[in-house]
Length: 106
Picture 1 (cartoon, rainbow, N blue to C red):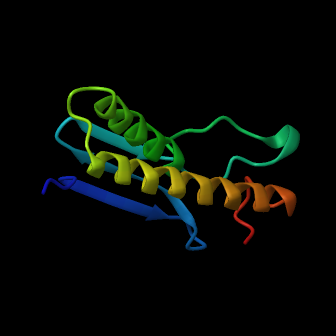
Picture 2: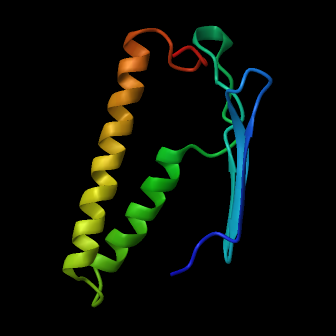
């Protein structure tokens, strides 16, 4: 089983997630560092979000499923990835409904 060869997750002075990196053969991810803010103070992302990476993996497995390499394991993996995206999107919506999305407010 292959794993990333290096990862480092950072925190800010208050212990909040503050980006990080993960690398491996053919892979380099720089994670979002800090909140994006809300309303007119909203900033552009400066790194990747977990949801973006999960979506990229799901797209790749779907590509395999549309080829001669389709199999039940790919279908199951896609189901789990899509479920993860659904739960994370529900979390984001709930945070947005509470007006805390884009902040470090819990």
